[in-house]
Structure formats: C-alpha cells, structure tokens
Amino acid sequence: MEHELRTIGKIPGNVELAEYLKNKFIPIKFCYPNEGGDRWHELRRNSEYSLGERELIAFRDGLKKIKEYVGGSSLRIIHLGPGDGIELPPLYGKEGFSLDTEYVGIDISKQMISNTIRLNKLILEKVPSLWYLTDIETEGNLKDILSNLDEKTKKENLMLLTNQGVLISNPKTLPIISNSMKKGDYLFITLEGDDPARRDEVLATYNLEEVRNILKVGLERAGITEGKFIPTRFNEKLNQAEVYFEQKNGKKILCLTSYKPKSKEQIKERLEENKLKTIFVDYFPESHSYAILCRRQ
Ligand SMILES: C[S@@+](CC[C@H](N)C(=O)[O-])C[C@H]1O[C@@H](n2cnc3c(N)ncnc32)[C@H](O)[C@@H]1O
Image (tube, rainbow, N blue to C red):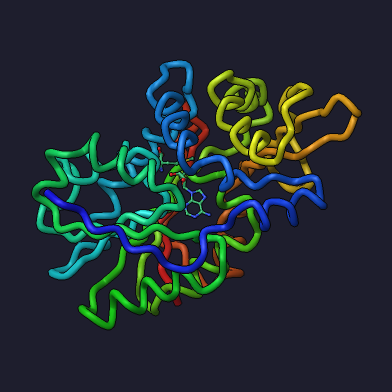
C-alpha cells in the first residue's frame, strides 16, 4: 500500500543547529533524521535498552484502562514521534483499538516513518493511516495539522505522547501540544519516573553505546568529533537526566535531557498548568514508570 507523507512547516537544519550551539546545546531532534532513524531502531530492539521495556509495561497497562474513557464511534489516534512504531502491535492488538480506527503518525524523521511503516506492514495494510513530517517543537506545526484534520472530519482525538521523556523535557512541548488540542481531546502519556533508590538503573540507559551512537549524529552535524561523553548525571532542580559531551578543548555540550518526574503530584501540576485535566495517573513501582490519561479543558 502507498503511504502519503505530508510535510508541514520547516524542518530545522544546520542554521537552526548553529543557533542552539551558541548555548552549548544540541536538541536531540537534530539526531533523528536519516541514519539517526536506523540508530534508534538498533537501540529500540536491543535487549539492554531496558528503559524501553519498562515504558512498554506502562503503555500496555494504560492502554487497557484508557479504553474505559475513550473510543466513541469516531476516534482518531495521533501518534507523536512513533520512532519505529513499537506501540502499534499493542495499540491495534487484542487489548487495543479496532483496525478501522484512524491512525495519524507525526515525526521529524522520514527514516523513522518509513521504519514504522515497514515494521508494521500487516497492521498498516488494514488501518486507515496518514503521515506527517514536521517538527512538533516548533509552535504552529501541530496546530496546523490538527485543525486541518478536524476541518475535514471532526473526530475525538487521542494523542499519544508515549516514551517521550526527552521531548517532554523541553518546557515548550506540553504547551504546544495542549494549544493544538481542541476541548475534550485526550492525551495519553507514558514516562519513566525517577526513583532515587534506583538512580543507577535510571541513568545507565543513557550511557549505552547505542544511545551515544544516536547523539553522535547531532555532534557530527555540528562538526564536533573529538572528545568524550561524561557519565549521565541527574539534575535535581529540573528533574531530568542529562548527558554532556566534553570536547578536547574542555568545552561541554549538552546533548540530551530527559524528564523524570518524582511523583504523581508533580505530573498533575505540570498538566494542570497546561489546561490538561488529569483523568488518571498510574504508577508501576517495579518499572518506576507512569501511565497518564488527561483531557484538554
Ligand atoms: C525516543 S523516540 C520514541 C519512539 C517511540 N514512541 C517508542 O517508544 O519507541 C522519539 C521519537 O520522537 C521523534 N521526535 C523527536 N523530536 C521530535 C520533534 N521535535 N518533532 C517530531 N518528532 C520528534 C523522533 O524522531 C522519534 O521517532
């Protein structure tokens, strides 16, 4: 089946990257296009990437529960950053939604989109799907997509922001998503939380070779090749894991930030600040991960 891909807005390139570099920061979105998509696939399917498995526990459990709240006669699923679409089998499996439920995949990486389509061919042959290439973190892009979809057919939207601690660590992401949603739309989030007693486990993920291979794509785009990664640290003030790369000249570049909430209350507060009313926040202590459903006010 042919899958149409629409591009919305400008995909940030080397000019934008140079601006970020002035603040010694490389947002991960510069790593994911092209070979970054395949490097993500290598990480996602690696058994040492235990964070991915922990987050999927929350995803599967939350999925069963959200069906009590969403899924009227006209539902549209909007998947923000599908990666290689690991959520698709449970999403349309026994515990998930019926195959006639519309699916919209939105990503900044063409390679991620084609990997999702290739790896979920059997499901996507049956599901009505639409694909958008865009930068979610640029104000206006998501709003344009959602208003465009609703102009054609007004549906109840269920947005998926699953396993996206890095995207959520950008303080602009939740406001942008919330501003793009119409009243009554749902947002399903899964996220690893911080557990100070298991901090080593939380941080170990980001020291994996495969994670560093993804970050190297952004560093290489910025012309930075010589230096070394510093072991991941936790920023208590911002509740986030942080990865720095130290250049030969001693300058440090921040390459990754990932939000790790400490409590249900902290999550609810952040959602409420963004006009998102919490329906449930479930915590899974074994995997220290959260499944969250909220609704736009
Ligand atoms: C950490 S992966 C998560 C993938 C998937 N949800 C999973 O659990 O395997 C992040 C995904 O979000 C996409 N992404 C990151 N930043 C983005 C942005 N600014 N706009 C659109 N997509 C973005 C990446 O290309 C990638 O597909």
